[in-house]
Image (cartoon, rainbow, N blue to C red; front, side, top):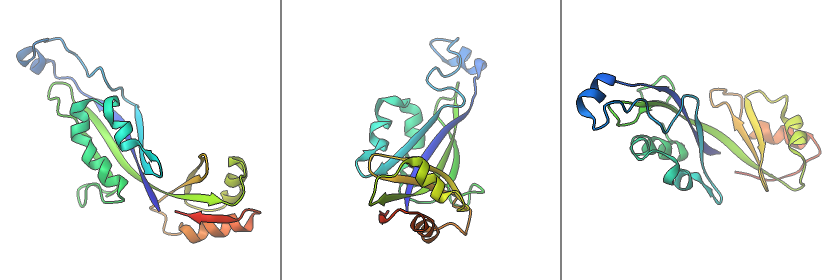
Length: 176
C-alpha cells in the first residue's frame, strides 16, 4: 500500500487590529498566497516525489514550515496527529502568520499502485473495480493504475482488488 497527502485550504482569517498595530503595512489584508478551496496533492512513489518538487517555491515559506512535517508523516503512512483528531490520518493546522492565518486540512489517503501485463484503458479498469466496495477513485498513470481506497472500510484490501481485476480479462503484474 502507498500513501498520498491532500492539503486543502479550508479557511483564511484576518485580524485588522493586529495588522494596524504591528505591521509595516497596516492594511495588508488577507493572505495573498492561498485561497479557500485550494488543493495540493503530495506523493512519493517511484520517480514522483512531489514533497520536494511541489514544496519548493509553490508554497508560502511560513505555511510550509508549519505543515510540511504533517505531510511527510502522511507520506510515510503514519498517524498525522495521534489521539488529537477523530481521524489520525487527518490534521487541521494553520500557518505562522498571526495577523492573517490560513487554515489547512491535511489528510492522508491510502492507495494501491497496480501494474497490469496489458495496457487497458482507465475506463476498463474502473469497470472491473466498480462493484468493489471501498474504492474512492481509480486513476491512470504512465505505467500503473492508482486505486485510492477508503481506509475506514474494513472490507477493502489488496485481495479484493486483485480478485476483481483477475475476474476481468486483465492479468496483474504486481501491486505496490
